[in-house]
Image (tube, rainbow, N blue to C red; front, top):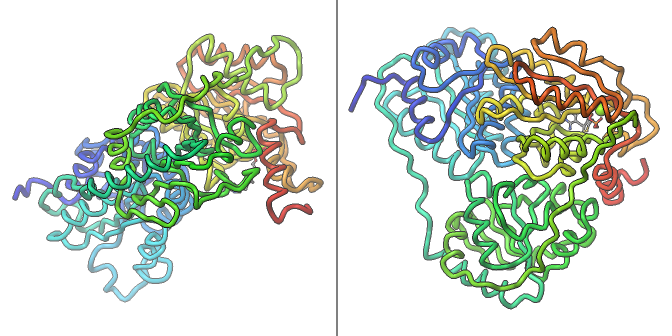
Length: 546
Ligand SMILES: Cc1ncc(Cc2c([C@H](C)O)sc(CCOP(=O)(O)OP(=O)(O)O)c2C)c(N)n1
Ligand SMILES: [Mg+2]
């Protein structure tokens, strides 16, 4: 048993072996020993940000864009609990985020004093994170630590959900045996084959089958396999709202994103009219289905999610999405001959004139840019940014489409820049930018240069769509472009289509820093996608009479 390792390096090596390629963090005294190990060992690069919610959002996004583990390292109490909302979002949206918190040493709790950063008892934080994660451990026993590290990290990978690891600050430098190699639960191939046969029989006997693909396709790196399965089956395919951006680099008979009555009517009728809907890795949530014009008959559907497949009243436990797709690929045959799908049409041709900007001009300008200079990955925040993202041509996209916490846009853009080395376009509203936009000040030390489009409508406009006639949705004009140079970037405030076009061309040609393009938009106007979504949600929910 090689003891050349310490508990700190064992944890770092175990994460690296499981695909983690960097750490986002913000230190505090309880985690300084582990920060020193990170810095001195060089096993994983470290990026520090300025506020723990951003650390959580960035680490989550790094895992999503890389289909691997995202890692966030913070201090006990004030740090970790500051990140609760970002971890909750990662859990809800099935992102394998590893939360590592420094913790008190073994004897610190015996002083008979409450410790700083302690909330109620010393195990309160552990209990809070138990509710937000799929596996947890406190590494307070060097004998069991290697096994515990492997158990928790492997669970993060197999369930694609966040996990919590607390590392006591007095043990980080202690000699420790290496963690066992990755050991994911063996796929139950017999069950997967039996399930695949039943799935294929149902698809074959349906008059109008369809397939809906969700986020698990990305989380488990299955886009390629699912694309070839869909080509083989020849059945119309759509992505869920949360699955927007899937298959951007693959060819298959993709209809586009399903948004119910808030989206394309052809896609809605193909999905809602299907008499056998195969859902691969789709989270059954209101943003994916809440705006369905016709409720989808879940009993006639086949749902493969969270390592379980449900077909009506039949249930196949412990059949992973990959095992099911592999088994289907073994027996798949052509079932339908989907009409050649018209290429999804994404508006282009921004007028190059003094036309005042409207929300949908943003998508047109980005589509024009993609056509002239090639596409970029996109990070979108919550608000109209999320819906304008739907009007932009297919590209890799990170956005909190279900849990929908504001503030993820800029940190996710930084993570995409760090992981992929490509400059992302970040779409963020003024309200969300007020929360985490300042993280752009960290670009200079890491050489990141995202292009950030701030949709400045001086409003929490999405809320106004749910509840008009309230002045508390009004925001002041913060002149964000003027602040950009103080953060080490360049800011351009634009009010017309021609100005937006020029600003984007300038930004794309200058990689020396981040660009903040402040697009001035009118209040009480939204993209068509958001308008249809809020109208549909209002009709379906208690907000009818607002
Ligand atoms: C952390 C956080 N706080 C509050 C909300 C509620 C909320 C929205 C969702 C419904 O929960 S949309 C929205 C307004 C967003 O304003 P802005 O970023 O300027 O974008 P836009 O003007 O395009 O709406 C809020 C406050 C949220 N989603 N996340
Ligand atoms: Mg706004």
